[in-house]
Length: 591
Image (cartoon, rainbow, N blue to C red):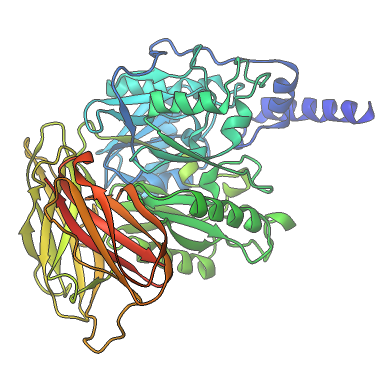
């Protein structure tokens, strides 16, 4: 009883303070908001202009590294940080600044002027009442019908019911940009979610913490009827095009349980993960979560995820388990060819910048001091929200790693290229010396392929060389896109090796597959000088695993394994043989 009385008095005090000073609301719930949710069940009303049934066509949630038409922020406190975001982002796309009223517009313009930030071009001021700066969590989510066709905005029920003005912002953005908006705000599709707890690979896979399951349970504090995990998955598929939804355990010291505080998808196969010293703060749970992902999920290409570690820096040597702020370098935002990253102290920031620059060659890495905002459990990603372009030219490619001249006399590059007007032509640009001009080879659409896969072969280079390359596509309407987006300043690269004639013969060898091209029963011969455990798998041109042909123990000697080619669509495929010691690939064409 005494605890309850104390809690009530604390909430009353906090309510009075907030009412008197109207300070910046934190990303987490204030005591007053917690009180309201405990004793009432406020429910966000569906926004008036939203469609509350799923889109009529299959959709694809945009990845954050795709092309943006706009970056949205709300001008509500933290003007120094917001001003620096505008300075960097307006050079890449339009910046939409949501302002509470005309007085806020005037204040924002005055601040930007004093900072020397030009707002006369690529900056729009939109008067739309709001409650907080945390637009990542309540802002618009971009999806595309039929992969690259119509752009839609998806709006979830915001998990801060005491901030109703925030909940209405997506509709205002949709109206302003004339984009249809769909909302998960009416039965049977009611779903509570938050943008900081969602990351998409742009290829129908997404990551969240299990907060989304917890917040949608029956008797939740949001006034909804609740959804099971199976139902949540279906809603995410219907509204967001998410067919594989990876959920991880919440972290003990991350009060809000949003994955953007410790993790970032850099591309379809790379995870940037925050790292603490061993045994410190959320380090053990982060590591357990990542090992769970690596053990149970593959990339869209059918290969293991790559993990890049980046330090979670302390404040005055203190981490969150010892009273320190939840400092993170993962809470960054892509803005076309620029990545804006939170910074804290030079001695840690220089390491973070190096890691970001190494991971994303050619991107401009802009650091902004976030010491004033991180105590509220958020940084750059939390206060920005991207809006995709109307008609993206979507390029998907799994970068090559090392290639062996003894096995390949050219280096095949495959990419999925999509635009709603179709692809007119495409090239692969390559060089072995960044100081020299780039060469190009024309890409051609894979014969018989219906999945928009294009191919080009980079000519063989000398062993020991490093090949730098990128893909450029030209749509039928004249739109040109490159990937990596900053190319040629940005690029992928792979090394060239050559197996020596005197090298030790591998214990298990994948011989030439026949017939090739294949149309029916196809033979895969394997020679082994000793028994070895392994597998034979079939991958499509994008590297997505489509079949397991054999899994078990290869016996000593020669053995043949078979698959029926006529059960697969025509196109280019790869046979992969994997043992504990090696992985070997053979190219095969199915007619």
